[in-house]
Image (tube, rainbow, N blue to C red; front, side, top):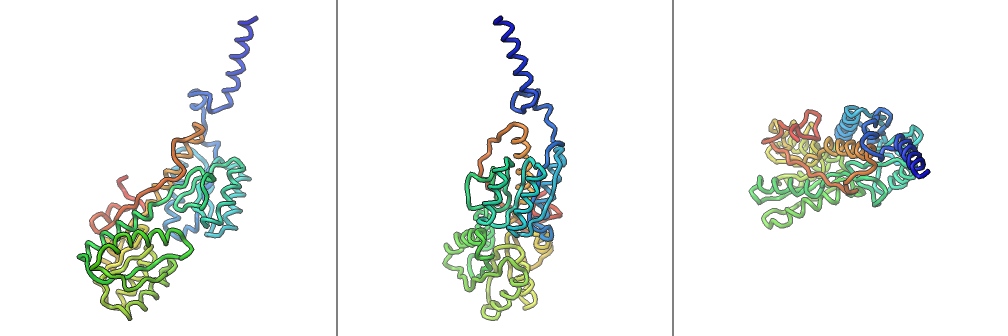
Length: 325
């Protein structure tokens, strides 16, 4: 009787393992990524940064055999919530999200979690821990400090400088400014003569820089919180006949890379590796779906790459990533 009971138990366990991925390598070998949908939600693809991360996430997922649905939240929390509700209705196995606000996105991420869908944030964090499976973001402080160090060295550690700051409501704007000042404030022979917000916008960057030039035409250079503002500042300087005044930004925008490579006013940028962050998210989702867990922490930081005329030719044609990684 005892032997018969043991055989029944073995049969039952084997039957159970047939339907569960955690029961061993034989079942793992039967894992079919084609049965799993990964939703990719980012702001508008008209911005090349968001396009690069979305395209990379989709391409990486397809290469692994997953289905994808790429959606655009337009930077609007309400639209984003609808996108997440769509992902839930589509029985998505995971969501990759570049969120529409660090506070406004918390409830939406929680909704996905409550529906049993893991969420992997890229590029920007939310103001909550333990809600998303991962928050994979650029090391904005390192990014800004590396740009400032290059700027100071190139300027001979002397002269007046200007800072263009991003949107005041954006945490990244403050962190990048802190990174700039962690370097510049320690150099007594360099003096900041103007600090103004241009809201991450190229046109505002141009207009703000025009006004600053009228008061300070003898500046040694400009540190901009992102490449878009840097492009605006560079255009204003060029139109004022100050093509020798360097501008340095953060992001890795293809237009900025072109200026760096071809002697434009923008001389350097801290390239955010959007392609790396997107790829990391897909790879970690793959591990989670196959194994039920990963060994990665929730908060993950990706260093930026300082791009100058020495390595501009190594940037991917679409920007936001290096050819050799």
